[in-house]
Image (cartoon, rainbow, N blue to C red; front, side, top):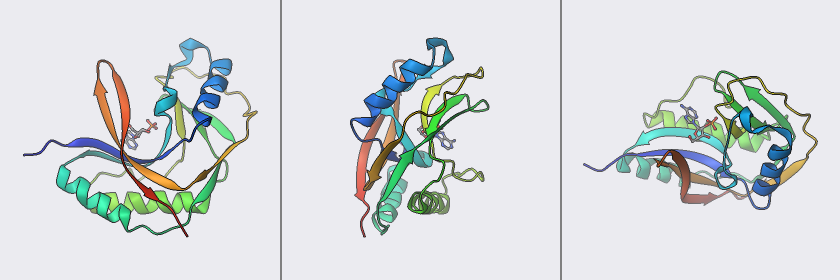
Length: 176
Ligand code: 2AM
């Protein structure tokens, strides 16, 4: 029997943004605010798949490969904290329609394939700090970062030696 992998679809944050984000975070949150996500691990999840067998991964990848939609621009102009999930995040005040469409499609395909999907609507965000269990002051986002989203990525979440890494497995281009 083949082993399952912990997978999710996400948007990669292109260079040099991860470094700029990490610099902004270091200037605005004290070390005790939470555990920082490494620059190389910053991403925006589109659909979390959970533990997936090799067969199901192939089926999900085939469906992802049939998605046809144009790219879009993502503006990062918002930040906040969710105490329940203990994360501090960056986000977008006005998610582009393309982002919502892509996430909803991937989530629907995942649900049809038997991957549990939360009934909560999609809340696009990039997690900056984990284990942020105490309310922290969220600075007004004095940044205005934008980038074109031209592809989406299937990632594997790999845990070991007390840390989690996200490994890109496969990419699909968004085009007209
Ligand atoms: P988070 O950043 O808000 O914690 C890899 O774990 C990615 O999948 C993370 O971005 C994480 O979101 C998301 N994720 C993990 N477990 C999840 C779940 N049960 N439902 C939705 N997203 C999840």
